[in-house]
Image: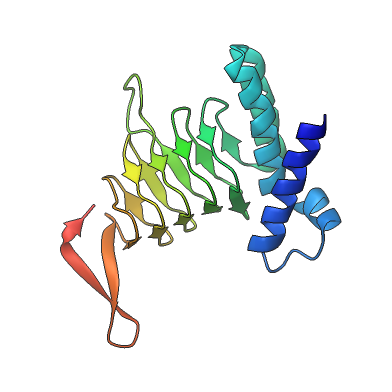
Length: 187
């Protein structure tokens, strides 16, 4: 029981740190579906680990119904996941998400077909994934990556870069914050 309250405190603190619109803990607990989805996921994931797969999936479907955020209970999610305006977020069964990751609405961490085994992305630590982005397949997103809104990422992304576009391309600042797109760096 104490462990559950510790997790709840950590999750509330995370939202308050990452969302400037969050005024206080009561508002976060009552009004943040991203928080609700993560907490429901953590419960469903425990049942998944205990091999109660149907119960785990049922709990996750309740979470999906209540929040509009679908997180498969088999996904592995680190600490500090912040889902902002989370409607339409989908996180697949074999997805792995590191610590301190921010995901905006409409993001899919999905598969590309009916493959068996690892078929969803692995996302590193300190990653920001913009609204509407699709990260598909058993690829790896490095640490400290920013992925721009509505990008489609189909290949591995190294650490410490920014990715935008369809398909995703690495960009770097140049001449007063104008971004230069490396055409040979399609990922």
